[in-house]
Image (cartoon, rainbow over all chains, first blue to last red; front, side, top):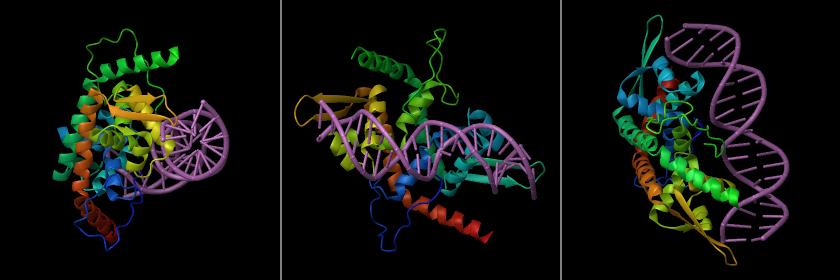
Length: 137
Length: 137
DNA sequence: CGGAATCCGTGATGATACTG
DNA sequence: CAGTATCATCACGGATTCCG
């Protein structure tokens, strides 16, 4: 989830090694965390529709603070998922878009987001059942 | 990410309303957070392979603490993604498996996890480029 | 407008110990 | 074995301020 420190790969690490998200110190963990982070998912999904400015993203994604959006976008940019284009004008204009790599992940998280939206009621129903059973206990 | 308080739906809420993850107070947000949570993703992916006991999950998912695994599984169970079967034997034996609903999400997060594993090197390369550019600045 | 920097609360996280 | 309880920490995330 954090934007910071990733475990450094040792030089001896063979390029052919299969990354394993189940291994605590595998870099894939950190990447997955960025992608599946609270705002990461929504940012990627939003950018899938089209290129957006910072303030547009802020508006589209309900509830993000400037800080978290900036932080999230930086992490995604560093990971090569998002392209940041800053135009040297006043007032500043910065546009965010998906890289080819980012488009691939975005499609997946977008699908996940849509799936969730479409199954909210089933989950809500499951919760009621669960809570009722717990209360009866 | 939290396991706790979900916004209560008002009775007037029409069942036909399309849930929107971009709305801050939509329940879909919470659901998505459970699914994409750090350990939620890995737990769902692990259960996609087959039914597992608590301690098995703990071993398979590198780095989880007992507390977080229990917490994660409870959230997923409450949301109707995971089925928990406790056998009244000594020593205790509890098996976790996916519900049909859970299987659907699990397939998606599994795909995401595998995609990530397969693109670690591209991301790592992107980071080097990014960091180099930043250092040069 | 698009951030960066700072301060700061609080809730998520994890180690440890305990229980059925 | 499968948790729960307790506690300490720290990073997530919000609010505010400042800058190009």
